[in-house]
Length: 127
Image (cartoon, rainbow, N blue to C red):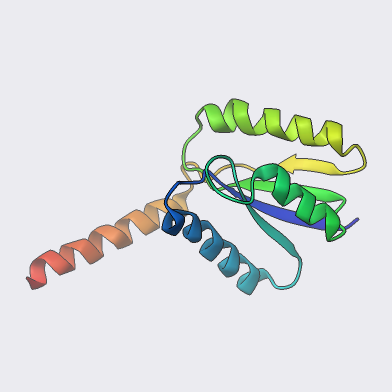
């Protein structure tokens, strides 16, 4: 079974915001090596979730793990993404789709917040 990873961002009309998801995907590729990775966006960005799925299938994936790059459990996590994945499963019955957990209250995020606060505090103290 050939697995593909789809890093799914919300998407933005601002290209630099969408670029951050691409940057995250590049970091994932660097850390975990070769594999099938694709970036997709739920709204406003390209490729869409469906286009990203098509790209992974064209590359040979028959199992796709969708990793939502979302912080909180909202309508997108609970309703929108699962419904879009159901459509993909219907259109691609020979492909297995798995939705990974979103970022959520992962302790590593707390570390990032503390790091950002310390950096901001140092900047304030240096001025």
